[in-house]
Image (cartoon, rainbow, N blue to C red; front, side):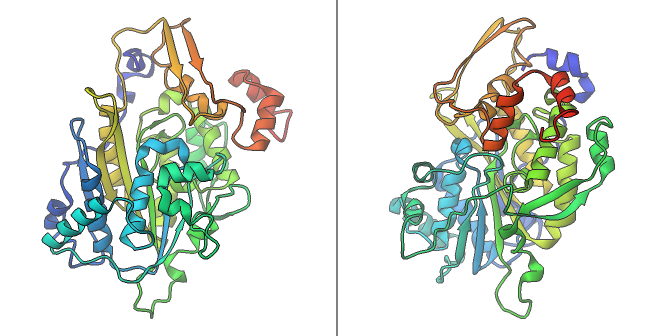
Length: 429
């Protein structure tokens, strides 16, 4: 990003996020008059740790996750929604593994770490992990992306979870999300919100869609007379600048990651029409407001849904990616705090616009659908008339989805005016 970001969009349109005082989970519990060990309903913001200088160890992350799960109480049904392999560096795979190990669904892959955390838990008088193993399912939030391969699951989630994908004696915990067929519409955001976000170009309600397995976990499907707590839904992922949503994750993980074709297509179109430069890095924007409306109206009241959000950054000395922040909560507060930190660690502010930029796309990027991030994330910085060189050895297709790939091949990358013109002629487009 370059300072022309503010010049072109106006100083008043700079990214706005809600800044909160960062506190540990224990400090937050004290402020709410509770402790993590004596309630099955933790405070809405359970954990908020992070700064540009922070480097969270795996042991610390696992300890915080264990404390959080202990505070929730025992569950018989746990559904985890992590990102797919395109967010490999989010550490969501590691956190998913920690959740699985806590519930004894898989044995620890690092016994030393597990022993250390057990000792830490005993020292803080935290409840012991549950004796019974709950039903545990994992739906990677693919959105429009291709399903994960076994090797990708192994790399991201560990060998213990990966081994269950081809074990004939156990049910495969991984479920492939089909954004065309596996969804249900749970409600609508008003057409007025869509019209505002698209400058009046689209005036229709936005459908809130979810994978059916997620919606089946709603509280009214749970036997209230049972002593068991309702199904637990954990949405895990990284908050990072995003070209469509402004900032990735939070309720995007549900309404897009495990959403349906109508909702995803319309949300992407809204983002494109609104303008990616007006969205990138802004935690609050018209498109996010649509998702927040649907989240507050339909998800918070119907699901026992919690978010575990990470902020990742690069260590200035080693060049390695490390966890700068960890936020656990059930509403917008933990997302806003993560956005605030992401703005500080995931943006490179340049004093001068480069005439030439070179982007290398690693093996995560196998389509132009994903690889175009090399354009989205540099074009606010590169000089007018400048040159962008993209090195993309793994790109082998246009669309992640077969039908989208066909449409891109049919129409091509021809710019917004031409695409809008073609939309009037091609119903499929």
